[in-house]
Length: 557
Image (cartoon, rainbow, N blue to C red; front, top):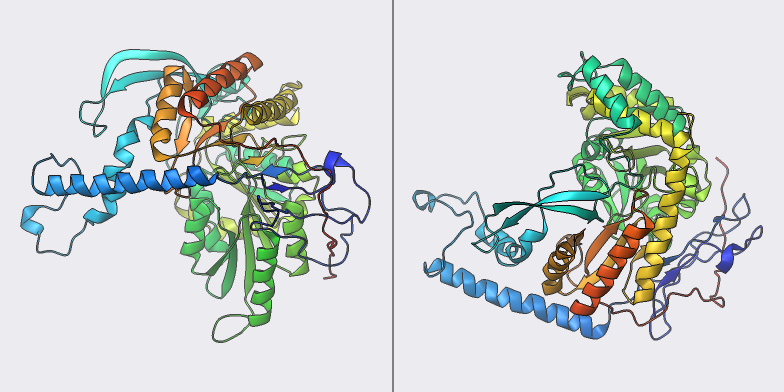
């Protein structure tokens, strides 16, 4: 059976102090797979945790597909060892990096076996990535045509351009990746006034009035006291988490958190413990054990407990169960770090992210992080929260002290697009884009499910993973879609579990219904060609699902 989870009664009906089900995942036998129910006792002060339906589906991998997928990887591995043998005996030309003969007696700088997957599996389908785009990365793109005559080790250009490829892979959620319109015009004006770069850090000579304006605007947009912006989204996480946690602190991280969050947690020196994805029972167990047991060996209380989650998980298309995370955070007096890289601008009735989506108070999230690289068509990231937090980061963040300030035209792009979303440009264009994205997302997801594909994630998530499973179908799907003028992103191991390779679509407000219908027709045709319609079930919410009998309670400070 497909795995469902919900945060409200089917149909969206709710009543005060109603029991809430926290994600029962049913299997074919009727049991629970990674199932969990409510993790807290008592009642939530506002009556209910979820003010809207919360539906996510993760259909089980069919057994025969899983077996064939493992067999496929096994065959590729065997042939990989055979090819390595042929390369060792100079029968097949070796293209990969190797140690020099005069350094064979040295401790190797390059572990040849570690590159086994890259040279024997990835290289077979490498042509599906790094395709050079030669136009504005909007809803349609132009792609330089290329070919290879050495099995994807190198590429050559044919001199032709593939025109008008429908872009189903970029994070251009609100369609602000444009070279015309008010955002492009204002950025061009700022480029003439300020130039392209700053050549200094914020703490030295790189603090412009545009940066101050942007930070004040971000704070208003998020509904927090203050905000600070950075020139790189990845570094916003990896360089700020070490400033917030250290030795003697505990970080509780979702198992599917982004690499930037993982790197930041590791650099902090704090103890890291992982909880199952979006599983509140797993999170509460870690919280309870952390408070009861304390630090290892000494059993002293942890200096700080920091819960780290994302708004939308970019490989699963799932949305964080934020009301439950906040309830747990309050009960156990922990801090919450929320990464809204994919959800800011893309979720909520006003585009203010997952907090807006659930109708929650921004003050309940201690550290609000997000990026400008997706919904705003810019670059960089931000941290929002209390003034005390932001003042602390201005002094202690590595990104503040050592990173070059954000480019002025990029800052203006963000300012203009954010004002458009907020309606401060005097138009309703921003809100229309937010609504259009939500409509496109629901339509695209519904049609794919109706066709028989296995689709992961939340029904409101613009990140739409379509399951491919078998390694040979990763490359075949990407190539066949490009033949039909559809640009997609395909993902496989190690970025996903070995049997869960997928194509990841990103829906945009810039996509018209005609574009989506064309893409859907081509996806259906390729799905029939490659036999990808694995789903055995219709995704209809069951009206007789049991609800958990526990609710949530906020304890007094």
